[in-house]
Image 1 (tube, one colour):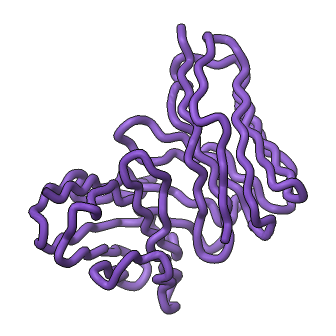
Image 2 (image 1 turned 90 degrees about the vertical axis):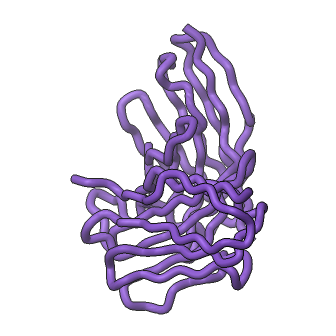
Length: 118
Length: 110
């Protein structure tokens, strides 16, 4: 079946502009995650959605970052007043609420959105 | 706070050699550990998932072990091929997130 998709694949913006990144999780996956990978660095957790529960926003680096999810489908990550340090690859992952054959909690990643802030 | 470390950071081997990639984590309260492969400019591909109650998982030439008591996981890749060249990441799952190691960049020379 279809995997996690993200759009756009690349985004170049000017400092101070707002950007919106989109993630389409695998159909039926109740959990959705956003991560950030800056050049030469590891992946950092940003935010987690699980069904209709309140999201875990503990990884968001500043109040310029926000994310929404509509039910158990599409999510958008919004960065307001972008700064050069926001340049990174933003990765989305989804996970089913139950797993088969002991694969509960397995996260499946999209291809990412490469954000460049000039 | 969970910290995940991968050693070595880079590894170069001739084709046919077995690969051994190490991952250590500080907080044993993980509910699973996942190994990923990342190719340049691409997303992450899940390779193996080990639940906290398991000690190892195997898929083809790949075998991953988990020792929670010592905070270690090892990924073995048998009979390496040039197509195995990539960055390999381990990640421990706890709470609502994965905590990733810095990765091991692998080059398999023909």
